[in-house]
Length: 234
Image (cartoon, rainbow, N blue to C red; front, side, top):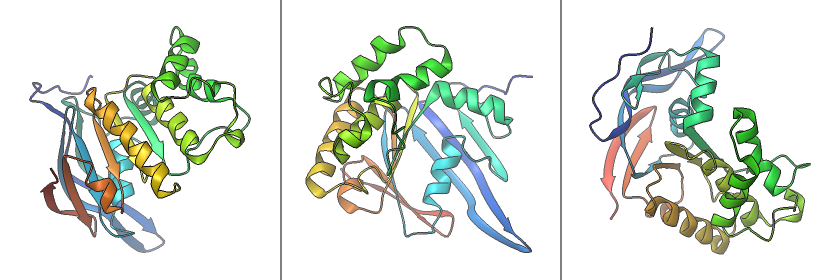
């Protein structure tokens, strides 16, 4: 049976009383402890908090990489909390893009192939053409045939952004996207994300850097697995 759909109210993703418990022997660790959160279509949301606060777990739940222990996750009004691994993988492949601190590029593949692969796995048409267009959009039209070792850190992150966007996802999730970059390069990556967000991309960014959080329209603070504050940043 298909999950129940709700009317579109401008909310892309909604978390309701989300819990995530990790069991380590006889010990339970509450990574998320009753999180309520709405991510609206087209917004840029920053997620901040100290190490171990639950920021990355929250991102993993939003990205269908982790299944919550309790609560509900509604994506486009549909409850996706209890999808099995195969269904979650299909939905993740269609609807969610990821940008990681460590880029997660395949070292033996060119920039073009790294960006093409999500489309090839999905059986999408025009994979090469769409990957080329995505790399051109992030300013790498002259680096299509370069492998990651031949690219700077900033260029590798731009390849990762192109890979996240090539599927035209509903939601892009970024975990410390400037964490491995120097300040100037990090600013250029943020400028690029700002441009893409201006085109309507919905963006959730986990960061511990105030300068990154200030780029977002809204910021939430997470501590001990709970959202303890919501702030407008501009």
